[in-house]
Image (cartoon, rainbow, N blue to C red):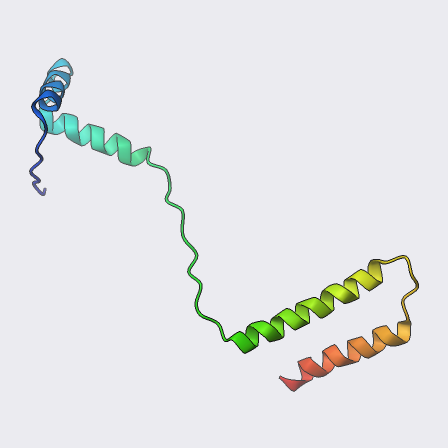
Length: 101
């Protein structure tokens, strides 16, 4: 067991003393119970996401790809007829990127 020293204002000390007496336990037991009940009911802390610095060129490249995908999706979802030949060309370009890896 570890020992700690805590200082209370006189009014708080008297409240602690009365509360522990009314429960027929020592002040140490009362304080341990109070701390443990607070710990058990404590909210789970939120985990902050840590973002690392990313290469600006990579971000620009990913942004362009995302923009192209959004344009393709918009065109496919529009009521206008989509040219199958154009779709095949786009597919071939995308596959050429994959083959470069």
